[in-house]
Length: 339
Image 1 (cartoon, rainbow, N blue to C red):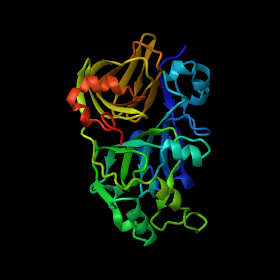
Image 2 (cartoon, rainbow, N blue to C red; image 1 turned 90 degrees about the horizontal axis):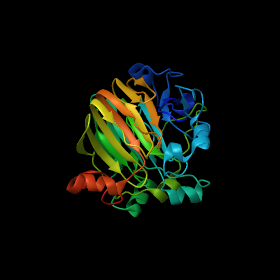
Image 3 (spheres, helix red, strand yellow; image 1 turned 90 degrees about the vertical axis):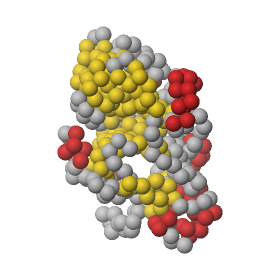
Image 4 (cartoon, helix red, strand yellow; image 1 turned 30 degrees about the horizontal axis):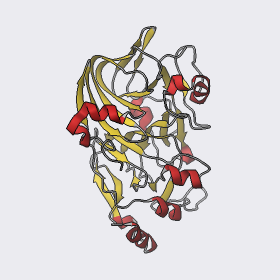
């Protein structure tokens, strides 16, 4: 029988994430493997990078095995396991990247999903900034800038602070800046095209590989997006702020002020930003800051409790959210028009 699954992450570190640091250990107390730990894959079914269950009878079982056994009871109407939840520590600037849509990834990356993602800034050093788009009007101008060696000077920079939410649809050129810790929800994909890497070299002394042609193929330089304000609904036990509801995922911040019942029918990926508790008819467990759990779609009667913020990602139900928000639906990325 399924129950709320408290998850243990898979870490990307070392040469895989040369830009990573110690913040995931220092900030959240995670058992990071080294001083260049860039990613904590909190809820992941990526082959070879699966997160595992910490609690209850399924402890030690990885997410892919659970999906194979319980299928739609776990995910609801979703096909496969479509989402991937991460925490990232950027001690240094990441490379300038862009991701493809599903059609391009399927055709060029052996049937993989594309990647649309979103970030919540958890911590940021004073003056921290990141790349969020490019200052080019169209693909032709972007190609000319790249061929002239001027991509770096055309990048669109924004300053960020804790609490900022950014939507990064496929085709949006981006780069996480140094001194930033983020929560990330994305499609379950590892397809990334590296546009530029600031001249860095790998352990072998050679520049890291770039994917210039693929990056040009999939970039959408017309995207000039802003941080998301969100739209808030009052609910039992607090309120919920919706930020994104596109074809891939829905992202909320649960502003918990007591006992907040959670909906059933869709799987819920929860990450606490403070001290919280998950309760259901058969038991309960605490969620410390930075810990994540997966609430199966078929499970009813689950509550998140406490006085804190909890990030909630799920598969989208755009008609229901549009109806709930009314005219405020325009404040939610992807809800009234695809981006």
